[in-house]
Length: 274
Image (cartoon, rainbow, N blue to C red; front, side):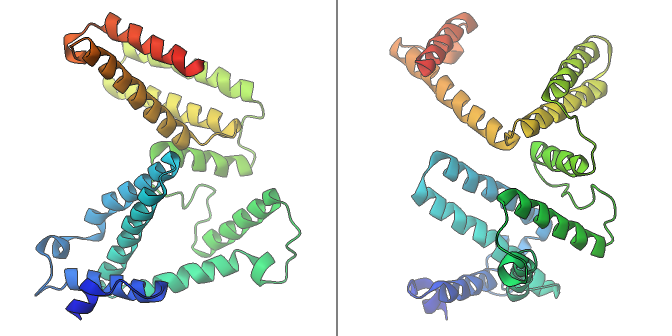
């Protein structure tokens, strides 16, 4: 079995899934496995699962297909890891996980595997999907509108999902200008909190501002997580441009003034717009 695990790189998808499951089982073996892997739990692995999902998104954002292939493998490993821990505890295993999601996808696509017509717009299919999910939540005794929005989601993504849920029952600003007015209001409250209140109040006001910025993105059809990732990448590129320009002068950011770095930054910004 060990030689098969190490050397067997042939076969179809099912074969390689079986190989990956065997690798994880061996890593978790209490007698012969890896000490680090044996110690892990659902909770200790969860941050890695989140990180790998973001690394998949990053590879997609950069259009790096070889990197995406590797990152998707890393993300698959996370599912296999959780499946192995679940199997050891008697909760579930990889087969039951795969069966569960297969059943869910069939149930959520009655226009493919049921008696409903495929002749629907994407918007109608999305509405039907959400209606099916609402029925599923009701079956889980999740009767409140905001039930089931995962706490562990990134903050902006969770804000977006909470806002979408509330909007479905009419709790939403009808006009974008009203959202912009609310952002101005929250920005003023941040300034007030900075000047007159303590750190907890300031954190709360900044949270309110971020929540409303996510709401603006939603109204404009922009994914706030995607937007901030793009801005982060742009910041890195421009700051590295500052480093390169300073290096040509024989210096570094730490040895330069803010004014000098800001002037280079503005040159890079102008070049981006040409």
